[in-house]
Length: 451
Image (cartoon, rainbow, N blue to C red; front, side, top):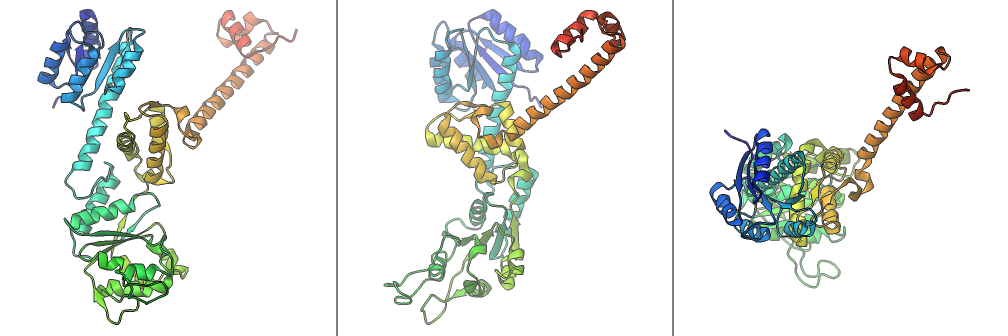
């Protein structure tokens, strides 16, 4: 199978097209040339290349007009604009109109190769995101292609297609437990209610009425009969987020409901029944809560029939850049701008960062950067200091290393000079270097002759 990158160069300078062709073919790319805008549009339709290099100044049609026509037919096709020196304003305008990047004549061909590879990798990532989003797995946009995410998707399929009615989703805060709950719901149901309850935000004195409902007059302020969230979820899914926060006084009643799906609204004379698929989630270790006396052991075992564990983002770091691209696209659409891009160094820093806040932290960072730097290339100095720690540590290590090398070099030179009575010619011979080389080192290391 041929996996080489196909490149279409649209430029009226034949020598430049020929030169680009030689260089890119040496890198294993397939190159086709077109010398007018109309010829370029025809070639785009016939070839559908991986990348288009498009000159702004064409003899028949303005490059920007060619760009608009290409993007109208092939919106995902990456186009790199070629601009003349001093015409960067038009190139920037082209990027705003949909070009992925631009390069200014005269340019370094190695730089062009790197730019093409970066663009194709960017498009490949976007296509992978679209595939994962649209893939008919019933798991929604669970973005990631790591082994851990594949295992999570398999677990969701098995659990979602089972006859079990209670699932416990665990994982650190910010890993996407609500998304997993919704994915389980989508696997099991096509048209059914999905009711989400955050147990941590419900007032303790009202949580029972919120869940089970209440009759009129059942408590102060109950001026009318109210349906509970369990009743609203009948025939579908009840998602109990932060289940570890539910008051221990209510845990026995919840356990009773999970046993037989029967419940009694507050103030009601008889029980009701609801056919509800219950998904509970927590970032706490419920076994520790049981040991501490804050959570009933029988409720824990009832919830833990079908456990699903979500990995922390640091356990699937190969998904970080995929998620970064996904959120960049998402927030670019939200803000009405081009997606932000990331320099190679920033990509490395984001990949190596521990992400204590998990996906929520990553999502918030990308939203912030999109708002502050819409459509820009994100460099190290644009990201918050906490994400630069590895970069600063790396520079610090390199500085320490250079200092240690210089100290060793200084010691060797001083020893040789002392042994030679500070006669530079003899010292240079002992060190195996020329007198001029020794003189340069003495100046660089700021060594002074004692005389």
